[in-house]
Length: 194
Length: 191
Image 1 (spheres, chains in turn cyan, green):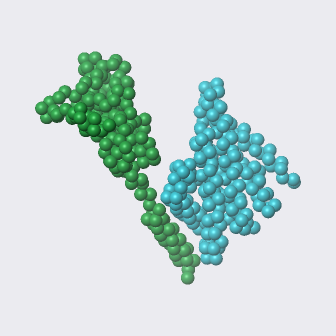
Image 2 (cartoon, one colour):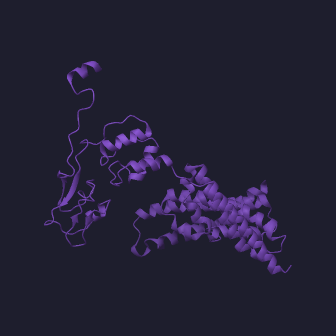
Image 3 (cartoon, one colour):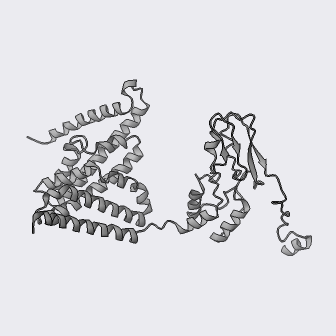
């Protein structure tokens, strides 16, 4: 249990996938203009990341490893993650229209993002990860992404009405803000005792 | 077995399984849409005018299927309300429009005053206005649904809504009085 909690904290704060490992930067910059869409995308991303780490772990352990095909990880992970997300989207569409309205449009958007493949590959690289720990890492990555995306969207909503100097307007001030956030998140590495 | 063959077979098998899963899901979880909304949509006049408060006929049809009132469609008028009431088995209500049901109207552009701004072209939901930038515009009367949406954007107010002129082709007998009020004795019986 302590190990799971540690992995989650690590994925959310210390090794935050967006601000420390720089994965998933395009949705971070692209979908952070409004806080409502940011919340929708964070829910979808958390969902997809958890699902991706589960199915990539199963693929790695029960198909690729026994057949000695670990060099096919990338293509295999992409295939399985895309199929599972598509399947889930169809199922949600049929069973729960309300949930589909919240997640629906964001699911295909995030499926092939680098953060999804990144979590799957990083999990596969850590030989000591079991099923639960891999899932916790994926879920933590999703929570970390949600945290910074919502924070960043809230800041950008304020920046949009602020008096920004002309050369800095738009993406420039967004990237500067993201860089400062990244600096702030580096402080969390102090949580680990050397 | 050579390692290449194993890799190809394993990927092929994986792809086949995934394809079968998706194919099954597409059949099993097919979103058939809302059949009631489709049938309601078929009864609406498809003017896409937005006078019901929804961005088009289809959204209004979905709203009716979700329990909205059936009397918000001025272009459809009484006939549409009756048809909808028949389909949904509810009591028809009078049209919910400030001036009641209007006689069919058609937009008319006073062409001498038109400055060719194309604003009414963009507003028209049925593309019944022809013209180009800095050219005079005109209305194709046969296509116009009389929805009023082009009147508001016109910067020089050169669009009039004229009552559709009666011709020998579209002249009708006036509607009889509702049953029960035909003669004085009917009214006494009803009481």
